[in-house]
Image (cartoon, rainbow, N blue to C red; front, top):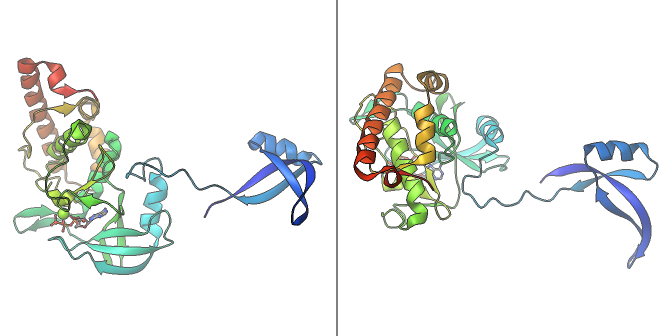
Length: 291
Ligand SMILES: Nc1ncnc2c1ncn2[C@@H]1O[C@H](COP(=O)(O)OP(=O)(O)OP(=O)(O)O)[C@@H](O)[C@H]1O
Ligand SMILES: [Mg+2]
């Protein structure tokens, strides 16, 4: 529940059925107006319940509120923790108090290292979120480092009420509206070296929107591209080209090893070579796609 202090100008008193009289207020004032009104005898300051924020139509409800979400991940009281019951890395779900701005988080304690032939690290979850922010993708939910009951891991915002591609039959959704999200996902995975974009790791939002989860196996040192380059999203591609090594070290330094950052730069070069080759063959408009 949100509360706001509003200064309101009293313009009259009228009788209303069932009430002796009611003060009629008509104008909510801006900050300077409120200050002026407060100096006048006709002004009164009351506390009213502010209307709830307009419901976001996007599943990426954290966009524009990342500070608030990260603080809740860091400081929300853990009420209970349960196994999610799926997933080879045994992720858990922790329920929070207060339940606003979100009710639960995914809790992943995966110390950096190789397991069952794969690189695994809770830090890669945080790196994926930080890189998403740098690139302005708005597809990877907030993720921060936290220590709970003596274990350090990644606390990741739980996005409620979405089903994964796996849960909807295993095929990516069809139609042009999904093109940009698919292109961004494939490019992102090539950049971060993510070998694990299976259908369970793509949550389906409103038309055209994916939420990308489960990046614990990404940011590997292998320089091969996990996905064939066919098309790229023009906006993401431009941003990705502009990122410097210094940017990556600054943003990802705490979460990845230097070799992994060098591998990202090499994979970007390989993607660029593939894009250039395709552009020469097909023309730019068919390869670097403007939405
Ligand atoms: N941030 C999230 N919001 C909502 N649901 C989530 C989130 N993260 C994970 N889940 C749910 O929990 C499941 C398992 O999580 P995740 O994929 O991260 O674990 P995993 O052990 O690496 O899984 P797998 O081995 O199946 O790839 C997901 O398929 C999804 O249904
Ligand atoms: Mg998974």
